[in-house]
Amino acid sequence: MRTPKISELESLIFAAELSEDTLSLDLHGMDAHTALHELEGFIQKAFMAGDRVIEVIHGRGDILIPLVKKVFEENEIVEYARGAEQPGKAGGAMYAVIAPKE
Image 1 (cartoon, rainbow, N blue to C red):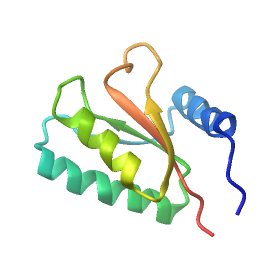
Image 2: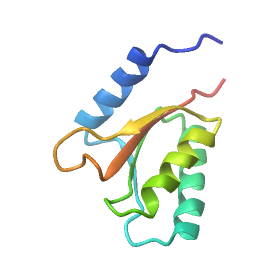
Image 3: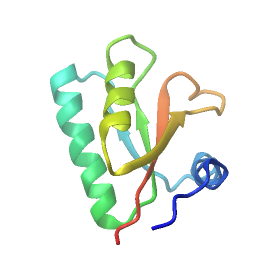
């Protein structure tokens, strides 16, 4: 399988940032244990559905940001992830590109 270039993955995220149809999970108000469970299930469901990009809203607090980053870094289904850049979401959300099903 060909490894996608970062520019291709960035293009997917950029399109997702502009879309109102991007699959999204809001973790606001959840404790770390609940958020971890919800996030892992969300990634798996996105993969099984064939969704390529997901948005995870973690808020700007100190608890969930490192958790989301760690899950994205350690999950083999996640090809690439970065923080949101659009106004109103920067610092409070992340996007991840999910590997396509083979």
